[in-house]
Amino acid sequence: QRFRKQYPGVEVCITTGTAEQAIRDVQNGKLDVGVVYAPTDRPDGEAIPCYELLYHEEFVLVAGKQHPLAKRTTVSLAEAVKYPFILYPKLSHIRRLFDRVLQRFDLSPQVIMEVENEEAMEKLIAIDIGIALLSKRRAVSDKVRQIRLRDLQFQCDVGLVFSSSEYLPPPVSEFARMCREAVNANS
Image (tube, rainbow, N blue to C red):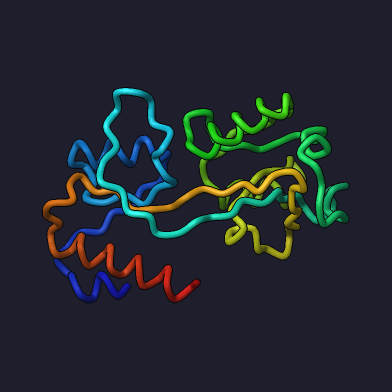
């Protein structure tokens, strides 16, 4: 709202998707800036655009209030994978990180659904479709319960991607400044 007041002539278009898609859209000029989970695990040979860290996002296991795990404050990852999971799509950064963790622990969850939108995930969790890893900031509904994983602290970096660090148009520069302010105000 502040941005639109300051730049009423600038069209603001918000899209959701994977970090890879946002990065591609920034590189191809479809987007001026992207807010993404850190693009550190991009395939070899793929360029990483200019990236600026905003904050670290902690993820927690989330279950519906009626789920058997909802009475627990902590569980091991091995206990959690006994229940159906709702996960991010395989191409998402968070999913790739989680898949590597599962591989390290030699665990294989039953994935009953793949969803890229945390709001949709939270609604599915609330009606006991499955459990999921959600950002701690997102998992605050009174219909879900956060559960810490005893053997794993799962975090991702969140930042801005730009096509270049050399010149940012004033509206993009101002948007980035507002993002930094919002992060500092919530820290």
